[in-house]
Image (cartoon, rainbow over all chains, first blue to last red; front, side, top):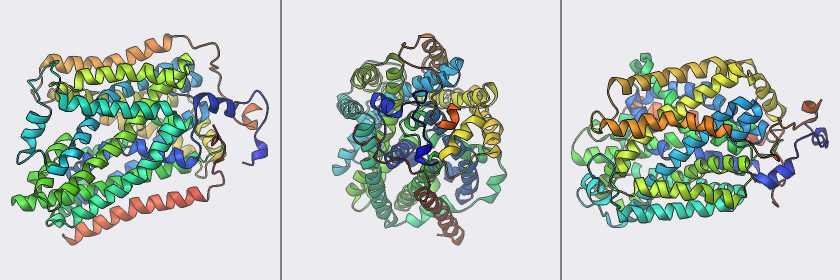
Length: 524
Length: 42
């Protein structure tokens, strides 16, 4: 589309005024770095390797690739089309799409609020462990050190007994985040990602090279990549692939809507989505190689099979990896590279999650950047410190993380797909919008994928998760029932309710809820 | 490492990193790169 086709009419959305008011990324490159920074997070490093290993090893690449192409990238385009067309935060975007869908945006904002509160705690642990790696502070017992000495985990329940060793790095994380967020969309969010994502790639490549040089690395890679073709016949393996793609791409909960609303109108969004999708997967495969090479070393050093040392999540990062660092020659370097990677990957993701909340508050209440940042970060920091710098932090975090991912992110994604695809039936319009500038044309296939295939598949994954927690309470009896109800079910159920209530709050008079018209064709 | 594991590792790397390379090339050849200077002075 040639530039002269852009209308100058006042009926058309004034992008420069909007950018000055809301903030904007300076270029497509900065947007892509920010989107990659959001997608590449802790899950890429500590979740993907285990999921791949547990679901067919090398054969997992087939369902994984299918999930990326059939669900991941199409869903990324869906989020991009919403934000880019309606030029707003998640609540404003949905309000402009159709007034009664605004609650979806607030539901997403609230999910991001909850995630940010506990995600910062994991970042604080990783920050501590970056420094602990220099002298291998965990000694001979990484598990005992992490649970007992560092977190000082108490009995299941809520205790307000502060752990200074966690409190201080957690405060540091919130301070860093505060500075980044006050700096704004381009100088804060954009530039942080543009600097940190290349840094993350370099640091992680060094980690992978070091891990591959360890004795036993081949054993680990053998465990990860040996294909079990029979696994492809199991529906659970395909569900795991779609779940992994969904959870790792930062789709469906407002981040990509918010970020794409900061991109100027003539940017090719479909091409950008493909780069972000494949960059995220490229990093995941790299993480799998690094993690399993290190686990192979651990298995050989301990004289056991890789199966015996495989771990994921918090257990992999803060128990298995410290054990590897203790045993490996030059382990301190390995430790610093690994935990620094976690800090950098986690920071860019945390920033994206918080931007969804700040952007939503700014749009709704017409607040300044500084005012909205303060209004969001002060309560976030207080709640984060209250729950996660105490001896009950690990229990609460584990429950909240499990429930908000399954019955928050996954549920709102399914509901929003049904509402946009079947309720207001605007997928065709969204495809047309993307096709004005996109090199990859979105047609009937994309509409069918988002109207039928993706919601059905994600619904099945959701039902599978629901069945799992109904069959056996989460934690297998480790947590008292009241904790699961309060921090799990009640938290997850309250999010759409509060989202609906937030949508009842009237918009300021200055805020237009009309659909922004970006082009001459749309005006006519 | 077994041969099948090596082959699958190479395929996995080629598919995702190759996909990224293709996506980047497509993007660079895009007719709508966006205006890089548009918001630079904000």
